[in-house]
Length: 455
Ligand code: HEM
Image (cartoon, rainbow, N blue to C red; front, side, top):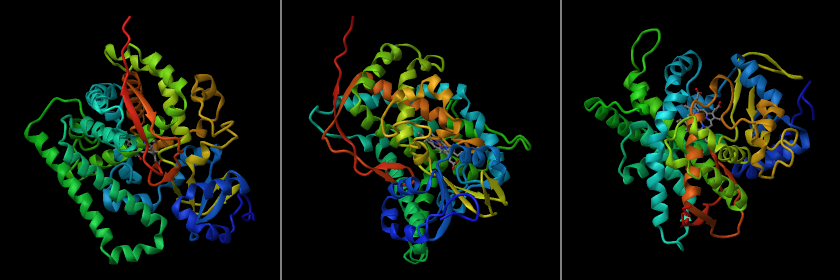
């Protein structure tokens, strides 16, 4: 079926027929509709709300860049999620978002990230030693370990000092649980009144309030004992609004800290876990990573030197192509808008389906094959820029993209150079799309220290 003009519509009956499967895992259903209806189509998401699903780089470019002023994030992000997280950059909108983004952006400048690399390594090195100390025949839960690692990195880069393990685990668990609850609310919108009546909403709000209290304790501690550390907390505390010269209120500060925690750890943890999964199947890629990592960590790590981990960067990019942590996002039309051959009405929803975009054969030949050389400078130059969007695009581009890429390059290169990883069984792992793209079961691996060969 076609809409009046433009993109096709998946009949509501087809969407309803696949509802049970869709709620459990929407990706296979969406991939099926793409085959049937082309790279951009309307469907009734969850059988209820009409949305334009797209995996077309031109459409995506128009929404995120060319016509970005005509689109805004949906209430799902700016209200439902914000109810729990507060209005940090990720969930904020309009003028207020722009003011906050201008305030915080300088803190993520490349030179600032350079200073954070020392803090990252102060987590990665002992983490590697911890893995090396496990008995060789003990299966390690790599999925969990990557969560632990990325949570510790974001915490350390925020407040410099280590946090007791129990406290870390409790915070990380609370964030995960609240996210899980948000996903349920999104996929089963008709249960919203039940969630309220049974107190689930309130319980989850309380959990995030507890995290905010903990964050406030770190802020107060820093105020009592100021440091000159180049960490994100000092960056946030020192930042001043251009117009008033004032710092952020505590409320805003906590909103932004919480958002950095949330946006900055689960995404990276999943990308790292998927990278280990792929590397296990491609030992030649591991050899190449080791080659370029040889001697790298003996020298001072700088923005200049990190370029030497070029192949590791390709691997990380290819891993996020196949398994993009942010697998879908949304935008709402703020006014009537032309979009390629179609006409959107004010209030219409567009859903850039990033997982599908990254496997669109028009941009990615043999999309299910792992090939890091898709990210050679020549290959990148030949592809439409908007065919690859792990960090989004346009003004709302991920503020932590350099941070995340460097964190992943350092982690993969360092751990590969120190340890051998082997998956503990031959079973494949499937995708489980939650807020981020998870694995349907934990990745378990054996890990043994490598014998260092000195010439
Ligand atoms: C592999 C890791 C990461 C991935 C795949 C990722 C992905 C994304 C994506 C796709 C968006 C845009 C969402 C949209 O436009 O709808 C985004 C926004 C954001 N990300 Fe990341 N991210 C990652 C790591 C990080 C890290 C490490 C941080 C912080 C340290 C961070 C902080 C943020 C923030 C604050 C935003 C909101 C930006 C704004 O709207 O102004 N992210 N991220």
